[in-house]
Amino acid sequence: MGSAFMKFCCCCCCSTADDDDEDDEKQPLVPQDPLEYFNREVQKRRDEETNLWSEPGDPSHSERQDDRVLYGLLQARTKTRMGSTGYRRLSVDIEAMRDTRREVRDKWRQILENLGFMAEADSLLNVSAGASHDRMRNAPAARDLLHTLHTETSLFSSRETPPERYLLILDRLLYLDVADDFLAKAKRFYPPMDDSEEDEPGLAINLPLLLARMEARNGQGNSETEDENGGDGNLSDRS
Image (cartoon, rainbow, N blue to C red; front, side, top):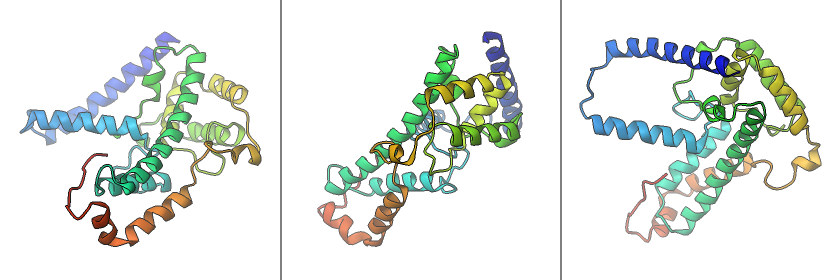
């Protein structure tokens, strides 16, 4: 298992190196401001780790409804004064969505660690914004497996489309020849829930409700923002 993971890492490094060679032809060897570039990359990785975008390859975060809602909430919070009632409400909605995504990732980590990937679980679950479906080795098999996990386990909410990030992770597991073992463990640890169980609080996010709230906030215009900001125009840029 360890040698298979090393083989996977080597192939990923080779693929990344080829892409880097192509990028080097288009970009200068030394950025104009190395510190700014470094800070931007650190912030990008922190953003990916914090928000766990369902479609990590979509920089606009607009292709999927759940990403679109989360991104809209984050943008709305940047225009709201920190500490205000509106800021706190937005923070609650944002953390609720993030918690749901972390819960899914933690389920996957538990299964991977049970399969023996104690040290490699985080690497296998890491999906960067540069991940591309074009680099997948077993895309059809990975999509079939994702569908099976969605319908025959409770890893995901049955009422929402499973995040595309896990399609890329399943492609890695297929390459490592542990996908069938992962599926068996998932069925054992997380069997399907019936509708009443899935209705319990904390198991899913009400996306239509969050979307309606976000649209209502946007429709209220700048007057409410000015009221909450105390008219001082002091907007926070934290996200």
